[in-house]
Length: 95
Image 1: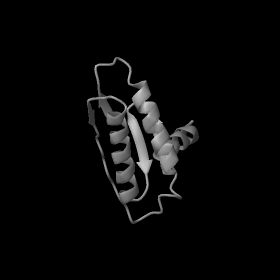
Image 2 (image 1 turned 60 degrees about the horizontal axis):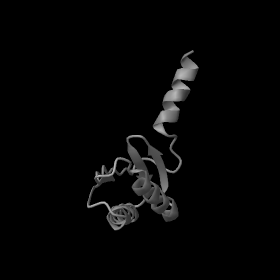
Image 3 (image 1 turned 120 degrees about the vertical axis):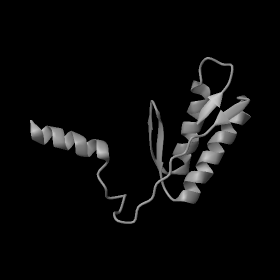
Image 4 (image 1 turned 120 degrees about the horizontal axis):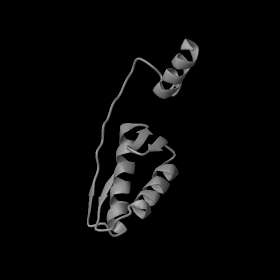
């Protein structure tokens, strides 16, 4: 979610977006380059729409949303170790 606004700080827009995502109950990780959200396609799409509308409702004249979607059936993602943890474990074992 990228608010397009003449304001210098986007914190108030992104803070509301974070609240919406947390209220959704979907697993998510917010970081400097964006937010990863995991869940069923319909639920993720609904949350993205709510976040975009929130930015507009809070005064930004425009908003852009970049979505990157993926799906897999070969593993249970709920039981999968996050890739960042796999790398940390690999590096720890290599020392």
